[in-house]
Image (cartoon, rainbow, N blue to C red; front, top):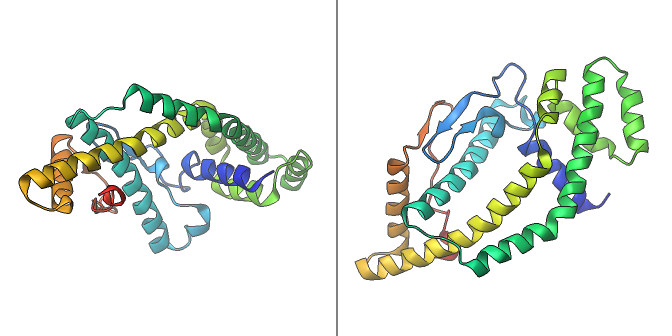
Length: 236
């Protein structure tokens, strides 16, 4: 298994994994007109859960990343910023180029989660892990996923999802937003020149408008509204 393959599987553990034991994975953390964030989407890795401060900080970063995605989507809708046909074609080519690798990673992840389910339903852990290793899985990855999924219900819930479709949608959204960010930054530079202000101030005004117009609201006060200053900085 290649390093890239392993990193993709690790990404699935974070993005598609499970909530902390005792926490409601369906709890709404953020609501907005363009999407919601549940606790399951931001929960910290198992390795950080004994340190509450590190865990919350990890979850805050994950929440911020998700909010930035929503904000870019909302800003593109508000300003009617769209991809050209050529740009949309480029996105699809990039998705096609990673599909085979993503498929292998999702299959590996699902295979390991299936083993975890067997363990959580009572099979001997060492025997199941040894079987997975013989089939080509990496022990550290198995143990990490096992730590993440503390109950059979966790594994069942994960296995019920269409990971291949989710991975493809995530790749398409990533490449689309990458181009949309550039277009938003170009529009901001134009506006700042017209208004005789800085691009940073123009961007701040955009995000304030987006948050208000699309009703972004954090429901769990453990978390706070992130700073949107850096969302477009690399393009300004």
